[in-house]
Length: 483
Image (cartoon, rainbow, N blue to C red; front, side, top):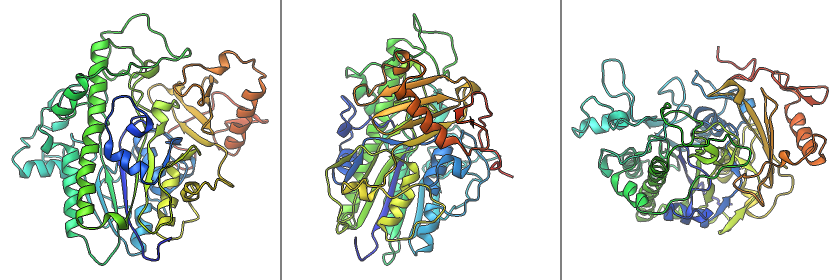
């Protein structure tokens, strides 16, 4: 490990699937800068969001705590005062801490350990009185590009729907461009005698699926992969029309499907090109060799797979995320390492603190992934647990377990189960429970693991060593609701 403290950059995207990287084998999406960062160090191909939606996923990342430990197990907003945060630990250690982009915590503008923030949780926020509510909109207004109509809705596309089209704004006025520009300004103006912790939090590729026109047109000109639909998924004889564009369970026509995917891939490609600007500036200032970069996302996007959209689901498209680390020089971490160990967002905080030589708070349930980069998996968790309270329908509250080879899913309100073999069926096309008897040894092994995981939960998910269907599965663990 280095004797001098490395600079740390945490890059997060919003709603980026784990398979949407060139280095992960995606057939069309272009991510040369992400790919280079991933290949320069260690990439975790079985990384998961333990609560796959924006706020709970980010709370898990920022505290190093599993969802049930930090309290929020569903998507909502609430005042929050955690004892330890990632930014707070770096600040206490003398790091200059900077947040740029989406934080998604309440109350808005609370710093959570950051010395300074440039916040823009979305592109469609206002204060009372019609003034820009976030720093991106303020930046647009200063350039005469904000006339009171939020750019995030001026194109008429829902910020949670499946409609794809090019943005009405030129590339140099996008949120991703603003965020990267702001990061470059920080690098120019930072304290040169202090190490820094910089969190760059892009809102893309979260819908609306409206990248700059160049990127939309690039992918519309390609043959794009079609959605995958498992033998267990909701079936539709024909595409559905006349439903709300925010509908999360729907099959749409081929043309709007291609438009949605072109928009989504274009947003990722645009972020990647902006990362090229960041990497170039780090090189120019001779900071790249002294900086560790960790890249991840808060959750994925179903993108029409299994006739579903959005997030909160246990399936790979929603729960699996990119997670890779480019080390600083002198950290004794090898490059071109690919690990299949099950890791999650709770592991981000302990990893970055260990990389900086800082103590890991006892509140963390996550662990540093740095030993895995050396192939040392002794004592690593056998599987990772994820969950989400019902978001779109209460009956969709779920738990999942995966060891990176198989995945078990249990819906808490209905008792529905899935078992997938991720090694032979990475797209989860076949549900093994459809073939198995109820007393299948393989299925019972996973049930027993979930029983052990949930045994002490106050909701009562377990009684007499069995999973109990229909127990309350709310947004907060009982007793941990905000006061």
